[in-house]
Image (cartoon, rainbow over all chains, first blue to last red; front, side, top):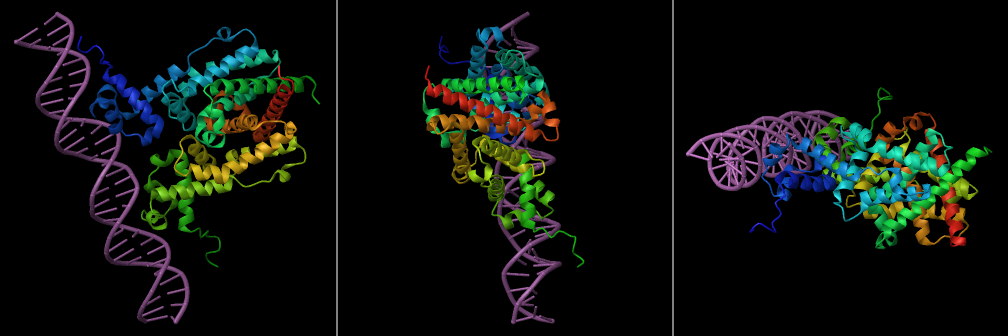
Length: 214
Length: 214
DNA sequence: AAGCGTTTCAAACACTTGTTTTAAACAAGT
DNA sequence: ACTTGTTTAAAACAAGTGTTTGAAACGCTT
């Protein structure tokens, strides 16, 4: 009764939340266990109690972020036509890595891991990223009409992903170079629409150049 | 005479070179001055002798990398047609951030700075990045025939840059998901050609949808 | 040779890091 | 009452951090 509004979040969960924020902002080596425990409002020794050490806390936190970012969405859930599927895929990805409603450290942690991988990257790629990539390739293949080779699929997939990750990795630059894009309240939708249209045209061109070589 | 083949590289330059490698691999906070001085084969105190402290060494190193990465190339140097210009621009960018002949830490340092900026980012954007961005916008405008608004230019520019940076930021993932792309000896040319074709189609689609809205 | 500014060196400084230890307090279950 | 697992608290540990110091060695001009 008295503790009705007091949120009884377990200490371990508070630790992961605080660790995510600080690892996301300062990286693994830049983060200190003292600052993490301070923000989590737990004792200094709690890290070594709930986790073996700082590294296991990091891996656990990273795993937590990856699991919520890479929710599996089946192609049939995305839409009817390949165009709708691609838009849904891109929009979903942007939401997951940029939506301010989600904890910002999810995307930050992912971006850090991609740029300077830890020893978890291998399992991370196979468990989370590759299935997502396969879905994307299927959508692209659908939009192209089933004509593209594996190499072409990889190149196009990289083009799509690269366009999305730009707004996460280079957000600071983007804010300075073209603030007008990020200011609109529904800017994520605008960006998703642009990337979709841009990429569909690229795919079509790829198909056309394949059909009549030269 | 006796010291003919012995390279008398000054200690300060050796420091910057070593600092670049280690900052690029471990980030600012993960790098230690002791490891830097060890690799540079200078005394520990040399950092505080040639630079005020660790931070000034980092800023100096970052500045060095940016200056060599962002060589100014005028549009007229790039080629005759907008298509050739875009290819030259993309190819040049990829070379600068990925060419293994160059010191690898240039690109790594840039990628790190974009993802988690230091207090140098503002001057860095204005001095190095914005002029480059303006060049790219000019090329895109040329390829589009001078029809695009500032916002569209920014979106398309981000798409082009994002595609290029993908291979720097997500190299580790790319190596695992599609190794066949990175194995070819002239893979940078292949990627540049793909991104150019892909982007030209995207630009054309943008122009078309602008002309006949609906 | 002597003097000079520049550069190198080993040692130490004060401080922070991750981790461990010991103790005690708390709630819940038997 | 007595465990049991959880949480807090304060202190200490060894190792590593960036930085400073003072003296020695160097290269050069006078």
